[in-house]
Length: 228
Image 1 (cartoon, rainbow, N blue to C red):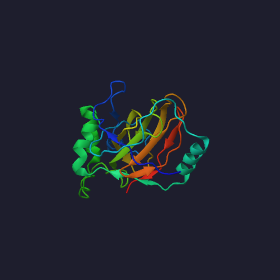
Image 2: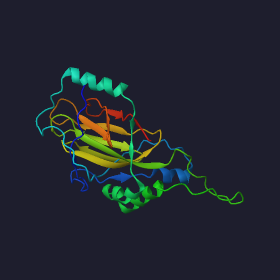
Image 3: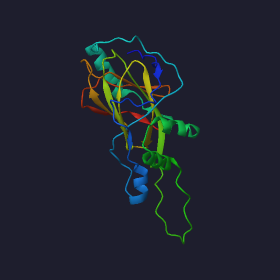
Image 4: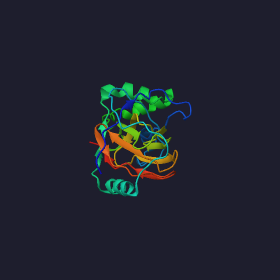
């Protein structure tokens, strides 16, 4: 199946009134306090975008029109395609990315603290809480979502590292800044199948396109991706 170009990106810094405010459950802060392993299944919310001007197809409406062959091909590509390398947010862009996430002040501070490098180990004669283990650090990455077929009200929820948000898919892509933990999957859950035909979600990180199958309501799939 031919790859489609990335769609036009919409500025989503304002949170739609129909969706709940994003929340962050601070998994790394929790790790530092309780010494538990960083294997979390929290809800995730995200985000914003600025910058690029991508266009994706024609803004058509009505139920999705995906053939059985195309649906099968998308599923095969999802299983066989190489892992997408996630596009990490540069540290200089953290303030902009955090602003875009629309978190309550306390949760924003927790996430900002979790993004900072672990402190240097104290002298041997000073007792302190163990630092977060290497590989358990929170990173911020960019994720782009859009509707690959008719714009019919399909919606998904992205879940990653204690952060969650439900996105209504449109032909204009929404680029999100989301927290991730290494070796902990980014999950995408089908929330609403607009006018039928399946939930047709396109996924990318930076310029890297991910292969994603047609989804059903309630289905949860992991984004096959990795950090650089």
